[in-house]
Image (tube, rainbow, N blue to C red):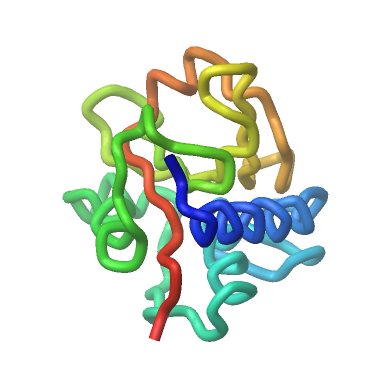
Length: 154
């Protein structure tokens, strides 16, 4: 069960994520209303909660995960967020996805409705922008990791 601070933080994450809905998709961007990719959405939420981003990101191509090897996105989540079992994720938590089995994880979104009852996801999706969409079973099977934002950040 979530602590009161955890529930408050998750509500803040969800409220900020919803502010980004309608932002157009722009690769490598992170500007609410102007353009964002999926990582940019997560970065924007971080800035709204804590201020400056915790690390500087290098430029990345559309195929960054395939060319770099490893689990860059999951590793970054482990550095800055608190990992949890995917089935324990609650609205306001971060879900990380693989596009296909065996591929590196390279998509991220914010769970916006409980996994057990009509789950939904807020994420930036190419050709759609930042949207809230059903987290259908085919997407649920692709969840590679889940995280929650920390209570505070130095």
